[in-house]
Amino acid sequence: MKSPYRIRGPAKWTWAAATVLLALLWIGSGRLGTWENAADGVECTLADGALFLYRGDPSDPQRALVRCGSNFGLYMLPTWEFELNGWYAACPLWPLPLIAGVVTVNFWRSDAVSRHRSRFNLCSNCTYDRAGLAAEATCPECGSPPV
Image (cartoon, rainbow, N blue to C red; front, top):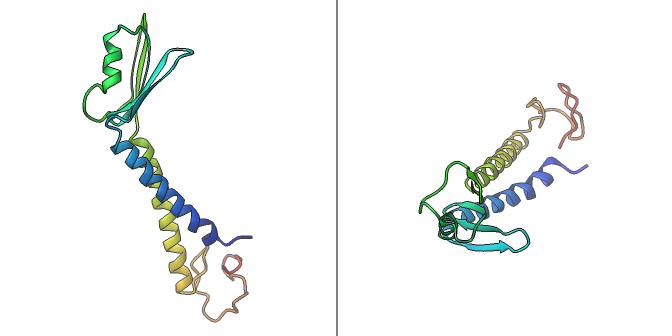
């Protein structure tokens, strides 16, 4: 069985990298690009900190707003509109780095707690002081094996 640190170590760095990349995507999404799916006519645009989806009449003025980003700011909440000639949706990107950041902080915190407990010879499960116990002895409080 792998020790918890061998699992947490790579995971905390992977989540940290994912958080940074998602934050850069969100911040740098001033006007990253537009692409269109010719099969069903859905146009996607990444701009103003949101992902815009549009399907409708090519002469519709709403399509021009989707192409250039609509409010020159950041979208805080998802928006959508359904009309007779199509639909429009904007999904903000800020929740992605926020969620990844919370997971990253959780991994880093649990790693710091684990290192603290091992440094002061405490049980990794219940924080029982293992002073005077053999290195391979299980914890007398909770029965967990030493890490």
